[in-house]
Structure formats: C-alpha cells, structure tokens
Length: 112
Ligand SMILES: [Zn+2]
Ligand SMILES: [Zn+2]
Image 1 (cartoon, protein in one colour):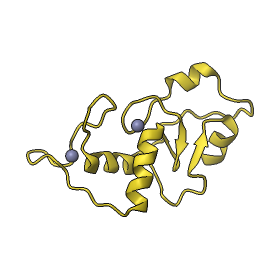
Image 2: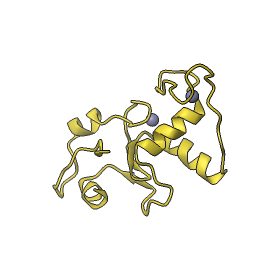
Image 3: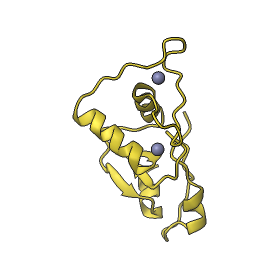
Image 4: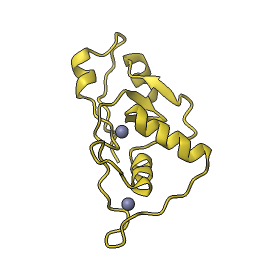
C-alpha cells in the first residue's frame, strides 16, 4: 500500500499550509504528526498505544458487516476493533523506533 504521506526532501520545517492539510489516516481528523510511523492525530496514536500496551483484543460491534465500520472523528463511538484495524492498515507499527514525532521535514525524510 502506498504511503499517505507527502514526500518532502527539505530540511526546513513544513509550511503551515501543508500541516493544515494533513489528515489522520485513521479518523480523518487533523494529523498532528507521525505516530508509530503513520500519519495520524494524537487521539488515534494514544488509542493505538493503549491497545498495544494493554494487549487488548476488540470485537467488531457490527453483526451485519463486521470489520467495515465507519471510523471518523465525528462519530461519537467509533468501533474500536475497526479503529485498530485502520491503525494497522495506515501502517502503524508498535515497534517503530520513533513512536511520537511532530511533523517536521527532517523526520519525514528519515521515516520514508
Ligand atoms: Zn485520528
Ligand atoms: Zn467494527
């Protein structure tokens, strides 16, 4: 799967415009940076870390269409099973060497 990130090879910080346009790959909220190697918001990153640290296993809430729930920051109760699977699909890796990084050009070039 191709990365969702914007490839930049600059050494100066990304412009504010680019930062505003970056969306969380999981819930479409504003992405605060790269978390566990995926472009995401801090809420999804915290959710992913909690899940991994506590070794949680979630069951999808949907009986009709399992593992196809909508995961969106405006949904009050996103299905945790589907949110976690979106985290993984977005490329989140619990073994990432740099678990939390603000989005700076130097970090982007390192992680790509
Ligand atoms: Zn998110
Ligand atoms: Zn679900």
